[in-house]
Length: 267
Image (spheres, rainbow, N blue to C red):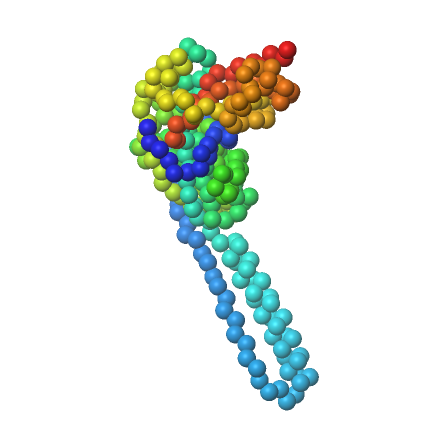
């Protein structure tokens, strides 16, 4: 199991929600390079003999200069996107205690432009010919203070495994421009074949437990460490009265293990 230098629980919160993105036939992507401009301005003092004429000339010049400056700023803000960072996680989702987990890939990118311009995120594994397209990316504010856009649920086709190796992620903004980055997925294949009761033999569980609480609509209302006073469900409901179900989750580097839902019985 490999570690990571990213903030703890980076992709843990969005990984708890989101619908699956079905794979598509593999396609091509095009990389776009960022464009940047800087305008340097210089002024100097001169003797002005005809003050009225020069004042009018300066006013017109300033107006033209301001218009040109505005065009430059618009051009800068409308420059092609690029990716500063890619964060990915593998999520092992256990529906019950006797079945192998569903394995899904969570991928988020940190664009150098505003994350609000994100339109689509796609992931491509060329060796297997698999491609996933997410047309409604999740926007996430990471623990490092940066904004990310991505998808939490890239799943393989039915009755097949998530391929390992090199992936390419493509980010498209609302202007239709695209950029790409590369990342690698590697894990012990046995994880996908293990039942929940075998998990402690493969994962260091202590100190990595997280609790996720959901309301009746399935909305995540709490995610974090189990509080010391939460000895039973009644104690949890005392703090989160609208909680209806709970998931215990474990984090190990870029791997996330989500145990089955547990109902919270109101006392």
